[in-house]
Each structure stands twice: as structure tokens, then as C-alpha cells.
Image (cartoon, rainbow, N blue to C red):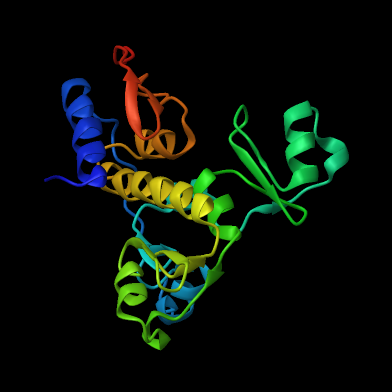
Length: 216
């Protein structure tokens, strides 16, 4: 049976195949630098040497997608928030579904996945003794014995938060598969917005509105 990630990716790619893809940007070569994957894997960072990002210990190959996922959030001044829901979410460490922004400890996270992951803690999978917990770090899963869920290398004790993070994680993985065809669609998949090129709107990682390709 196909996974949710595979299904979402194939649905999005099928839509793109019908519409065509924008011209790919000129390839840029990563500057000569030492590989930082070892530290980036545990810090949701970017390795310039290999031109790859990490989120929850999983590779994200498209830089624009990795930036959009906003792994580290941004410091905010609550006084600048004009949305009542955002202000309430900021005060309660919650999430504004209207603006797709989560708030935690004085920071704003512009993707559901990054906000959910910020509520957990990064762990070293090689230091985990429980086989069920270790297996969960290879993707996502919940260990009943220890009452902890893992999404990649992030552990979450709250089961509802883990479930939401796991769903957002599947969408991010599907988006990374779509990114080579259209990174704008990949970005829209993780933000529930619209690809400005293909005029495809996404909800929960799947296309819900298909438009016509704009004239050149």
C-alpha cells in the first residue's frame, strides 16, 4: 500500500505534468566548505558543502523549501501582531490557522511542522536503547511502553502534538519529492497556499484547485 507521502507526491506531480513546470533556476554550486551535515542533522541546519538541509534528522534537498519550513522560527514583538487570533495564539503558545503561524517562547514559526517540532526535543537515535523508539526515529512512530513519539530525531511527549507533527512531516517529505518539478508548488504544499506559477492551491499537502498556466 502506498504511503501518505507517496500518494501526496504523486497527486501533485500528476497535476504538474498536466500543466508544465517553470524554467529551473540556474544551478549554483555550493561553495567549497567543510561538510556540516553531522551538526546540521541535530540542529535543523543547512550543509553548504552538500547543498542539503536537515529537518528532524531528514534531508530536505530544496533550499527554498527548507527556508519555507522555517525550522528555527523568528523572534517577534507581540505588539506588531494585528490579528486577534495571532495575539491569542502568541499568549497561549498556540497556532493561528488563518495565518498558518505558530507561537512558542517569543518566537513565531511560519510552518505547522516547525512549530510542532519546536515543542519537542532533538535526540540522538544512536543513543536510544528501545528498539521501538529507534525504529520511530527512521520516520515517525509512537512508543506505547515509554509514552513518547518520534518524528525523525525529535521526541514529543504529547500524543496530539506528535500526531500533528507526523502529519506535517509526511507533507514536507512529499513536498521535497515535488520540489524538483516545481519548488513553488512544494512551498505551497507545506503552507496551504497557492503556487503562483501553476495557480494550484494546496490544502493538507494536496491540490484542491487547478488553474491554467499563465501565458508567457
